[in-house]
Picture (cartoon, rainbow, N blue to C red):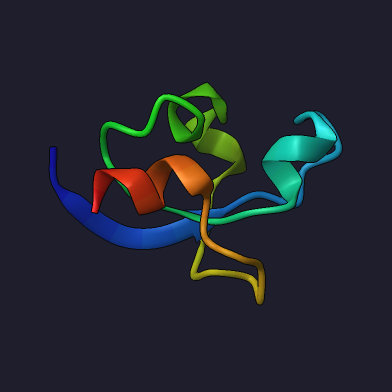
Length: 56
């Protein structure tokens, strides 16, 4: 488990719950559901994913 640069998605191909938060852990199971081609750098002004918060 490691921190990574924040990423988020705005892709309409991803479900709404994935577009509402950003991720910053490489082993976040919610973040892993986002197709890498839909990743956007930064937090996008969104709150941090609850799972990433739990991971530290």
